[in-house]
Every structure is written in structure tokens, then in C-alpha cells.
Length: 280
Image 1 (cartoon, one colour):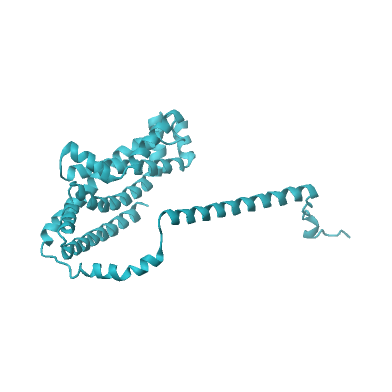
Image 2 (spheres, helix red, strand yellow; image 1 turned 30 degrees about the vertical axis):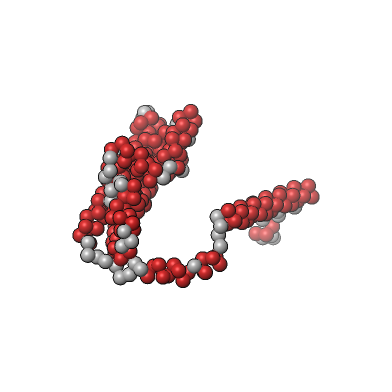
């Protein structure tokens, strides 16, 4: 009579690790643990040092809370007597954000391709990345001061300032999206005998376009907020009225402008969120 083999008899037994392998694994685990502890100590030291040179003092903040509350009370009740004028300024600010973001997205797209390591050689990638770093590192207010001298006071200088700074930011985000794409569609397009431009148009863009649109909408929201500050240097928008009210100590008018700005940004956030859900 034949005996049936049990499943346990057919299951291979795990091989026991040799003492040398165990020792190597133990040393590797200790090394990883030591590296993590070193990173934690280094991060803690950086935080402590940053707090010291930044003069972070929560006790001083608590002591000044009463003075801050007294100052804030001067802003209320808000004065909406010039709301029509403020509404026109808000529309101008949004228009600045639209054009600054649109121009930046148009220019950032080819720059992102040239800055992607999986599409271009390092001799092209590195100079383009440094150019985008320069655009991104300089604040919009500095660019606004430069363009005010070039084109005069008004919203056009603000549009140009937003355009240059946002180009560096979107170019960085766009290039990172390209470097994380799947290579399969590109290889498929390449196998059909397509040119480099066709690889980008039909293999790269369909994969990154939803992310690009999402990034652009996020930057549009940020640019509307930034445009509200550019008026301080004469670059148009609601910032002009805000700065004038501050200088005249008309705090209720400042409060009204801030409330209108908050409402406008909130509405833009809701609209852009709906657009992102449709795209993604």
C-alpha cells in the first residue's frame, strides 16, 4: 500500500544562516541604527542652533500678547466704505496672478524638459537648473523693483515679477514630474520610429500633463497672494491700497482690505480645487 506524502514533507525547510552571515547582518543593523541616531542628533542640533540665532522666545511672545491684542483691536470694526475701489483692485490683483502664472507655465514647460536628466545630457541639464534656481531664489518683490524701473509703476511690472519667479518654481516642479514618469510609453513611441520631439509629445506629456495643471493651479493661488504684496513697491493690485492705508494709520480700512482679500483667495481655492479634481 502506497503512502501519501504530507504537505509538510514537500515543504522545503529554511536554511539556517551561518555564524558569519549572522555576524554580518548584526553589524549592518548596528551601522544603520548608528546612522539614524547620528542623523537625529544632527537634526536636533540644527533645530536648537536655528532657534538661538532666530531669537525664538515663547515667553516674550506671551508677555507681548496684551499689546498685540490692543493693537489688533484698532482694526475693528472694518471700514467697507470704499469697497467698490477695493473690488476693482482685487480684480486687478487676480488678473496679475493669471497672466504671471500663464506666462510662467508656457516658459517653464520647455525649461523643464531641458532640466530633466532622463531626457537631456548633463551639459544641458545643469545650466538650465542653475538658471531656474536663480529665478526661484530671488523674491518677487525684488523682481518687481527691477521691472518698475524698466516699465514704470503699475500692474505690468507685477506681472513680469510673478512671471520670472514662478517660472523657476514651476520649472523645478515640472522637471521632477518628468523624471518620475514610466519609461514604457516612451519606449513604445520610440519603437515606432518617432523623433525626439514626438517622444516628448506622445510619450512624456500625456503622463505629466495632469500634474503640470495641478502645479500651475497651486501656483496661481500663491501668485494672487504674492500680487497683493507687490503693490507696496508700486507694482499695482490691492497692495497699493493696503500700503496706503497702513501708512495713513487707517486700520479699519486695512481690515476691510484683508477681509476682501481672504474672501477672494478662498473663492479661488474652491474653484481651483474643483478643476484639480476634474484633471487628476
